Amino acid sequence: MSEDIGIDLGTATIIAYSKGKGVVLREPTVVSINKDTNEVIAYGKEAHKMLGRNPSNIEVIKPLKDGVISNLTVTSKMLKYFIKKIMGKKLLAPRLMICVPSQVTEVEKKAVIDVANSVGAKKVYLIEEPIAAAIGAGIDISKPSGNLVIDIGGGTTDIAVISICGAVVSTSIKTAGNKFDEAIIKYVKKKYKTLIGERTAEEIKKAVGCVYPKNIKNKDEEYNENSDKIENSTITVRGRSVETGLPIQIELNDQEMLKVLLPDAIKIVEAVKATIEKAPPELIEDISEKGIYMTGGGSLLYGIDRLLQESTGIKVMIAQDAVSCVAIGTGKALDNLAVLENKLKK
Image 1 (tube, helix red, strand yellow):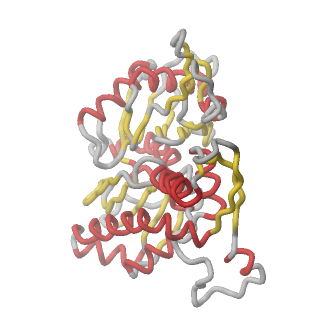
Image 2 (cartoon, one colour):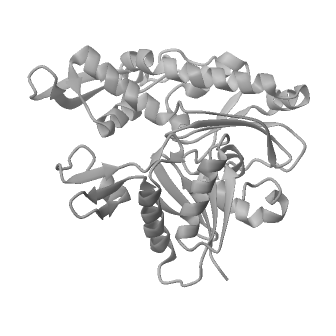
C-alpha cells in the first residue's frame, strides 16, 4: 500500500503531513546552488542558514514566489529530496495531495502537477489552500453551512467562503508574510539608513511586529501586570550603514512597526470584506454566528485578528496549530477522497 502525503508547498515553508504520523517535515522553501557546477549544495534549513551569508559562487534560491512555482527545475529537485527524506527506504510511490492558492491558473496548476509527477508520485491531487486550512482546523465543511476561512501564508493570503466541501466565493491576494518583511526592510533603510536582510526582518516582525495597538485591551481582558513591558516592546538588531558601509546597531519598537505593517494588513482586511460582500446572504448569516477562522503563519502577527474583528464586526478565531493547518488538512483530505473528489483540482 502506497503512503499518502499531504504537502503545503508554501512560498516560505514546505510542510508535509503523513497519514498516521502527523507532520513529518517542516523546512524553509530554500535551495542553495553552486553556480560554477550547477549542483545543489543544500535544501531547507541548511540552505536558509546561507541567506545573506553566501559567497558569489553560491546562489540561494527561493523557487516559489507569491504562492506559485517560479523555478520548475529547482522545485522538482527540492520536492524529490524532501519526499525521499520522508519515505526513507520505502519503494512504493506515494499519493500526493498538494495545496494551491484559491485563484490558481491552469498554467500554475500544471506546473505543480508536473513537479509532483517528476518525483514519481502514484497519483496527484490539488486542493485549494482555504479548503485544506478548514479541514486542518477541524471545521466540518461537508454541511450546507457557510464557513469563512483566511489563510495568511508567506506569498499569498487566501480567503474563501466554504460550504458543502467547496469554495462558494474565494479571493487570493499577494499580500502576506513576505510583504510584511519587505515593508520592514524598506522602512529600516529609509528611516535608519541601514540595510538588513530577510532573516533580520522576520526576526523584527516576530518580536515587535503588530497591526493593532498593544496598549488597547478587550473589554473582557483582565489586567496584565506585565502590560507595560508588552506595550513598550523593543528589539535591537544589526545591519549595515548605507552611508559608511560599516556594521551598525539600531533599536526598533512595536509602535514603529504598527505604522509600517498596518497598510498591508488593511489590504488583507479589505479583501476579506470584499469576499464577504460577494457571498450569498444565507451563508453570511452562518458566518456571523460561527465567526471567521484564521490560519497560516501570518495569522500569528500580533493584532491582525482584532483588526479584522473590529473592521467586520464578526468574531475572529485563530486555529490552534495555525502554521500547520494547511498541511494537516491536505493530508486528511486524502482520507476523504470520495467526498472531495468532485471538488478537487486534478
